[in-house]
Length: 394
Ligand SMILES: *Cc1c(COP(=O)(O)O)cnc(C)c1O
Picture 1: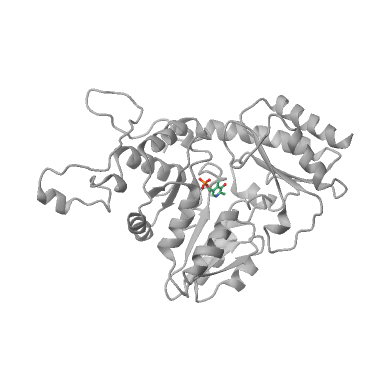
Picture 2: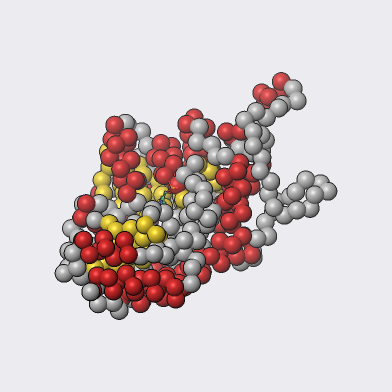
């Protein structure tokens, strides 16, 4: 098996005879024509052995699904219109009224909001667990639990959990569980490059292809990957019932991003670590969160499990720096634009009020800013941070 960096470029796609281009074309269709009634009755969409209707996939989307399964080290992939739709598809496919869902307290915010609204309205309860404490997860698992979300690292505060330990707790419980229990990891940060989610023990891995795989900040898409055929079919049938198809042009935009993904990941990783270390030395900053920094929560698990890190770090300001000053710092940045999302070419940042998004106590009084480092020059980004810090120390 070749290195993943090579596999992202050399892939099994076969162009039409006589047209030896390696790029995958955009196929767009609702209707697919059948040659006769027998073909219409028997063609099978559920194993992706034939084309039946645009919603069930096209050559473009099947190719991207196969490639995302490869990236993640899984076998089956289902594409959905956004990363959040991937979270929703997983919940809809595996949960029924009366079930309980466990979510890390530091999870991606909209995952929690979905649990608090639609899931609750559909009779599905949820509890938040401390992902840095496997015992807390053990105590919260019950006969009602059907799905456990994992996320690496925690959104915004970037604690890096011990995924194998959490997966071990889930597996021990699954053995005694009457109806099975599914563990799902939000693997957007690792992107399939930093670690293999299945080898750490997850049953299902979701990614926002909006982030690294597309890399351009110009498309929204999500993927749901598994090695388990039965789980895949539950996901796929649900996908067809709810109609979460993706557009051919969008799939092609992601396919164009894949060959450069490993290099972008490495370049953004190096730049992010350099800026995170520099930021640690600044007078206004109390703490910098980045899993590769010694002292950042979960650093030891990151060191053991990961071959790299994504382009995110968070700075927690000293308590004497007011929120108004933190806001002024953000407003003064010129290259770091204010906005959501990450892993695109442009650096971004956003301030967060952590106590309002966590149920666990938060020890800091200073404001937090999360940075996503893009592909600009590190020296220019550091100069930008420096001039914005000078505005608040004056
Ligand atoms: C961005 C993101 C999502 C959602 O992706 P969208 O495509 O924006 O819906 C889910 N999980 C994580 C960790 C993310 O960063």
